[in-house]
Length: 183
Image 1 (cartoon, helix red, strand yellow):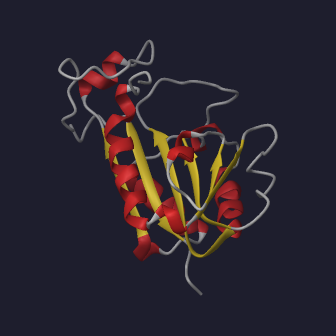
Image 2: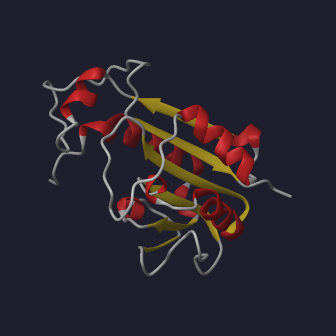
């Protein structure tokens, strides 16, 4: 069994995984930017790349995809709008972009740390980038205990010791699933 997930990502992972299951991953070609979390899903095909091999702000991934993932990447980008436009350009019509970001998480420059979005901010950002406003789903989660516990280090989730209830005024993570227009 693998190590437990970061506490600040438990609810986010549960919900985003359910969203992807609903899409029917077995019929999708997937690409993940700077990660490999999603490779365990039964996609028709899966590929990924990481910085600096792929700087999503400056380059487009090769190929066309039904879904693109960016798990905890967008806060590190100098030009997130430019990067989202690059994602949009490699999605097939009706394709999906799943992006997850921290909100109230400490500064972590790997190599830089530039932006934070709430669920509402992600919605407007993705709409401005050209995604279908009627096909954008967002959410966020957090509570004061998770916020405080993660100020100094990443805390692994412990069932029974860590709360998963949501306090709206203390969001620590946000996520969005946005669809490229069909036409």
